[in-house]
Amino acid sequence: MAIERRVLGRTGIEVSPIALGCEGFEDKTDQSEADRLMAAALDAGVNMLDVYTANPRARSLMGHALAGRPRDSYVIEGHLCSYWDHGQYRRTRRPEEVREAFDDLLARLGTDHVDVGMIHYVDERADFDAVFEGPVIDYALELRRQGRIHHIGMSTHNPEVGLAAVETGLVDVILFSVNPGYDMMPPSEDVNILFEHETFEGRTWQVQPERQAFYQACERAGVAITVMKCFAGGMLLRESASPLGVALTPAQAIAYALDRPAVAAVMLGAHTPEEVAVDASYADASAAERDYSQALAHAAAGTMEGHCVYCGHCAPCPRGISVANVGKYLDLAKAQLEAHEEVPETVREHYLALSHHAGECVGCGACEGRCPFGVGVIGRMREATAIFGE
Image (cartoon, rainbow, N blue to C red; front, side, top):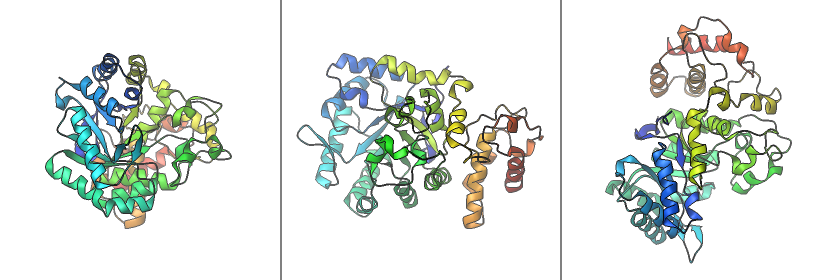
């Protein structure tokens, strides 16, 4: 099965939901190995690449591996502010270093532009203010005017900073850490806690309101989310380390990330063609193989009773309704009605673009019988019909 395409939010760019991070190029010195890795990804249908690394060798390996391929056959999410200093990466906000590093990125990748210029690693509010009130955003806007970047992005692990980025109206794509373990965590400016198993002890799974608000704001504004740390640094794949108390398979973790509102692509750090094949096999995974709902139901221990998590376990609907997608737009609409007493046209348009609508529900209850969280789907279909009119 070919890897499907998703639209990268309001950019309109079509991307593969399985994307390639640059980690696999950082440990390589042999160009032929880099060529095989890149070819395995692109030939499998992956068309999106994230290049956060400042390592000049890795950048050059990627550039040579892309040489000769049509520029419109792949999409680059290239990072600003990632700097190589005497053999060591560091984040920078110094204008001269930001310029030097970006010029180096384009030169080594052998391109005159990146599709998304990603302002690198903004987790602290003070840093966010400095970036968006200072020379970094000025430079990003200059690059966009020049056509050297086509869209502005930002990477963060902090949903409150992500929400602030959405509210600027300048950011089209946000690279964000998405997985069910991290969704348990309230906002923090310290990314290191996300890698410590002790951080999750005593927590019961549920999506924290700040993260849900961030996802919904992105969906509403047309800001795409690309995903990092889908496996929580591997913790989710090991029962002994999993914040859920049970291990997920790679397909389940990928499906969870792709089911969050506004998510367009998951960046996976494959190191070998064989690992690329495993990641790309998600396209052929069955609904049962992607189903993460039982793991979440186990971890939630009743706290998510009655709450839709968009897992799709309710499918198939005999009328063809995508219950999970209707649920996403219903929750977006309800949040806006509560805050602003109106449903944004973008949400209404996305709902109306669905092939089947809530008004087609015949109330058979098959979906409710399959839902592990006891969601009253029939009632939610009636709510959606009342709000959207069909």
